[in-house]
Length: 483
Image: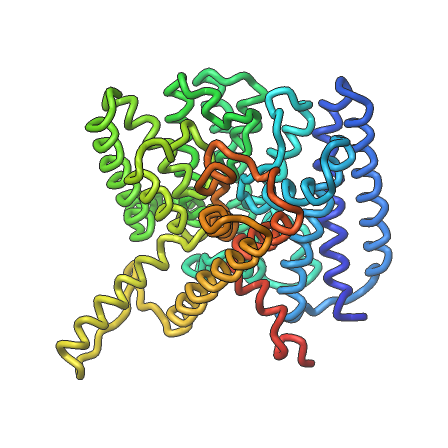
């Protein structure tokens, strides 16, 4: 039973956090239907009762958390959060099955952005706010939970952070507890700035709040069926969205360093420079291609190209237009971008830029070794030597990343989906992008028509992708459970 005591304590904190989150939606639900209000009140009440029971169970316990418990805490807390996040949606929308509600919730907390809901334009504001909150907390707010929990568990904050993120470069920063606090401050600050910017660009207050939460978290939930395409005739909104999606995809540890008087790290970091340089290159190429093959001005072409490219590469998943109609060249570009992701230590998903950069260094060294087999070439990245453990983790992650997509594609095909839908849905789930390709799950599509089995499979894929696969897979190894 001692194995589960710290897990119960953390899950109790998750339940209490969720209960607090429901209060925000309760305020809006007061002026809406009683069914919606009751859904949030019931969810919040049950969460409070269960959390108090959990606290009572662990009262007076002295914990020393092992690595086994740490991984169990991470995975179980995300699963529980997805379940309780689904409750208000399931209770408030009579036409929504629990499978759909869970899919929507998992898509929210993993910041994937895939949706099964239709009629968002007329949906109660309390539910739209709830979707935004799920993404905001899922983006990086869940790590802030460690501020309250870790002092009780006597573990370093960065240990929990490292099970949810690939930010190995930030482990050397001192005072991990203060680092997480500062990351939370930065996250809230950027969100508030995004909200103000959206409103100044032309959004109403409510839309600005929800879109700010889903933009900075690189989540992609919008208040409209047309996504941000609803504001497609307002270029300032698209440029504001592009800017804050980029900010959400940069390493938050570097923002903290900037706060500590080292702002130069934001533009001298190899990962940031490589990421931003790649975005600029792709934007210029696709904008030029659109101008040459359409009657758009270069500004209009660049506005929509920038927004959609940044949205996909940061794994946000907003769309301002159906980019699959831009031609086969654009479809191929966007498909490749789904795999890239943002920087390590950001809210973005997918493979992450630093892995590609280190892979390039390894490939270059291997080519040199073919010419000079007895020479020694160091693997250096960002001015530091890359250890063998990092190289092994990159190789392992890349293999399991591709293997997960392959298995998920095969399983989805068994549900009756064609190859394009199965494959692109698998990719978008594991990379946490949101829209796939084709008429069913493409930018103008919706996941509601998929079977229940397909939705559960994709939900599992979202969780695997958000926790970077290895964190979940390790639970299914024999050695993990050995005493």
